[in-house]
Image (cartoon, rainbow, N blue to C red; front, side, top):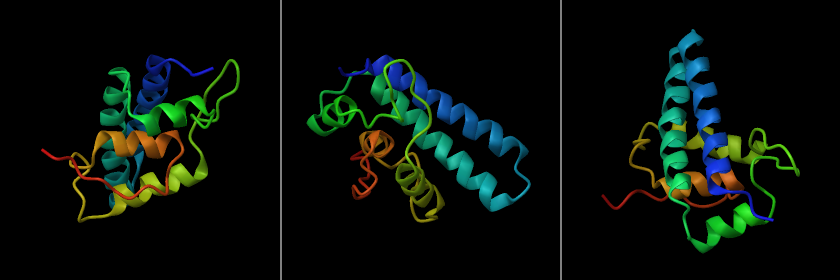
Length: 122
């Protein structure tokens, strides 16, 4: 059974809020900046999830049970590979976090961290 996109969006929003809290208390400037960049990417990914995307890859990832360590009742966190991919994007000074395609970020969070970075067309 596929989880509702609103459920996925709520969890991604929760991840963004956790990163924002961590950024506020982070003493290391580089780490604080990386966390803030993750917040931007995760917030945009959550907004996209709220639109109930019909992209085949996203639907497949959501329905295959790779979503946020899901079981029948609970979803929490993202896979370590997705964390690493998200951090790599956030740490790349040559990439504007608001310029990365939100669907790409959502795919990474849903379990496709090996996907190449895709920049927004706009």
